[in-house]
Image 1 (cartoon, one colour):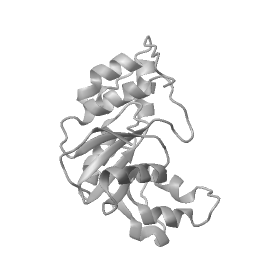
Image 2 (image 1 turned 45 degrees about the vertical axis):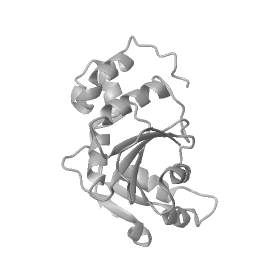
Image 3 (image 1 turned 90 degrees about the vertical axis):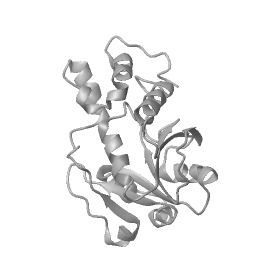
Image 4 (image 1 turned 90 degrees about the horizontal axis):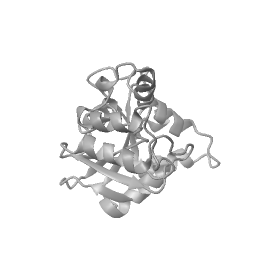
Length: 209
């Protein structure tokens, strides 16, 4: 784990928002702000490698630049990059920086939570062991989420102030490619960077980073 921006907070409870940030959206910031009702600091994590996809279109350095710009005015937000892309890998990379006593809570939408809990792991006890190392803060997106009873003690629901179900990085990219309005979907602080990196004529030499 490399920390690129560190909050001045000394947290007892750390929220971790990991993603591809292709590009960062207002939904990412809304998730992080909602998580501050449960944690002291939110660490945005951009993995250098993803478990099931590769970097394409816009590379690691450009996504990190947008993420730093999007979070620069938030004193409780930090930004890091991880070598691993799985929640368990990221959690273990956080420990040397935050210590063993800090509670770790991953911030995610219900789609990611369902994927983590229902994945076909080789070891049936994997989910139980993961939830001993971290908990989940889960926002309703695209429907109401109710955690399985056996995991409910390690999963908390996040309540967002608005409906962000139609806000996604995919929607931003598709709207740009079709020439449709997209500025309302990303933080105002990164409008110029999104325009630069995602306009149809842009070709990024670092895309395979």
